[in-house]
Every structure is written in C-alpha cells, then in structure tokens.
Length: 69
Image (cartoon, rainbow, N blue to C red):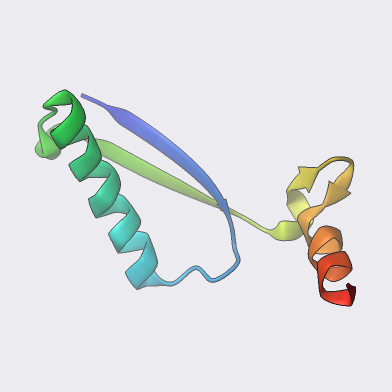
C-alpha cells in the first residue's frame, strides 16, 4: 500500500491540477512498481509561500525579488 506525500506551495493550485497530480502520481506507481491503484494513497499538503523558506528567505520574498529584476 504505497503512501506518497507531496508538498507544494499554493501558487497556481486548482482542483483540476490537484486531480491531475493525484492521477499522475498514482499512474507512475502503477507503471514503475506495479502497484495497485486502489491501494495507493496520495496526500498533497499545500503550503503558503509565506511558510516555505529557501536560502533563509520565504518564497514570497524570493518571488518579489524575481519580479523586481
């Protein structure tokens, strides 16, 4: 019974994209490892860019800096 936990920032997240991510992840495990899709669990944690840090800065800060360039 595979369990996959995906963490993503909240940028551009839609229900349709989440559904594709769940389906694609499940299919990857079916195709690669022969896992049963009925027992494959995919959990997606959506994190605010204010709560995700990279290199000592929040992703929100990094996006602002990129936009200013």
